[in-house]
Image (cartoon, rainbow, N blue to C red):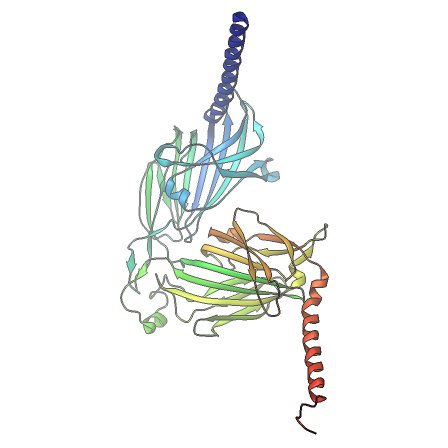
Length: 473
C-alpha cells in the first residue's frame, strides 16, 4: 500500500513538472517571439493640415527569434491612446508596380502597460513570420483633440496658433535599426519646433532623422508650434433618426450640436470688420460647412431653434448631393450652434432583401459634414411596425441597444435599433446594415384601420339619421 501511494505521489509530481515545463516553454516561446522581433526600417508621416491628425507608419519587421511570430505590437503613449479614433493595418505584398495591400486585424493587446503607461495594440499577421523572415506592414491611424491652441484665447484679428506634442523617435517595444519621421504643417508659418539632430525643415515639412539602432521604448519628446487657421469643427453630439416606410421612402432627421473647438474668441465682435477684411478678421472662424448627402435626395430642410434658415445651397447630381449650410452667425473659437437637417430618400436605393428572405437597410454611419469630429453619434433606425428579429452589422465596434417608438396609428409600436459611438471621424463614414423580418400583411394594418374607422363613422351617421329619438310623435 505504501509503495502504491509513493508511486502515485511520484507520478503526480512528474505530471505537474511536465505541465509547468510545457506551459513555461509555450509562454517563453510567445515572449521570445515577441521580444526577438526587430524593425529593420520605419517611416512615419504625420499630417497636421487640419485638426484631424492622420498618421501613416511604414514598417519592415524581421523575426530573429527561434519561434514563428504571429503578432506584431504597436505602442502608443497614453495621450495618443486616449485620442486614438481609428487604426488600420495592412500587409504590403508584391514588388514595384504590382504592390498590393492585404488588410490585417488590429485590436487592443492584452499585454500589461509598457514604460510610462504605454498602451499596446496587436496586429495579427496573415501567416506566422518564420525565423529569419521579414514582412512589410503599413499602419494608418487618426488622432483627434490633439492640437492645443496656444495662446488659448485670441482676438478677432489674430491668427490661430497651435501646439503639437509627439516624439522624434517612434515608440516601439522592438529595436529599430533605421527610422525617420516627417511632419507636414498646413503652411510655412512655423513659430518654433524642437530639434533632435539630424532635423531639417523644408517649406511645410519637418524631417526628423534618420536615426540608427534605437533600443526598445526610446523616446525623444518634441514640440511643434505653428499656425493652423483651418476650421476646428467639432460636433459635440449628433442624433440621426432613420425612419423606414415600406410605402417607398426613408425619412432622415439629423440633430446637431456644433462647436468651434479652436482658440477661444476674446473681446467684442465687429461684423463690419469681419466682412470688410475677410483675409485678416476672423481668419480661423468658419461661416459655412459642406454636407455630402446621398444622391436623389429631396424635401431637404435646414432649421434651428428660431426657425428655418434660408442661407443654404443644395447641389444635386446623379452620383452625389451637396448641401452647403451657413449658420445664422459665423462661428469663432468657443462659439456654438444647434440646428437640424432633414431630407427624404427613395427607399429602393437603401432597402434590399437578402437570400434568406430578410430585409436589410444599407446606410452610412458617420457624419456627412466634411472634416468634422463627432464626440458622440447616435444612429436610430426606426423599423416599420410588425418588424421582428432586428440586428445590425457594423464594420467597427459600437454600443447597441433597442427601443420602441410610437407614431400615428401605431398599436404595438415600432422597433428601434440604436447604435452609438464616440470619437468619430470622416473615415468612419462607411456603410452598416440593419436586418429584420417583415410580413407584407402588416402593410395592410393601417389602411384597414382607417377604412374600418371611416366605415363605422358612416354606419353611425346613417343610423343617427334614421333614428327617431323624439319623446312623442
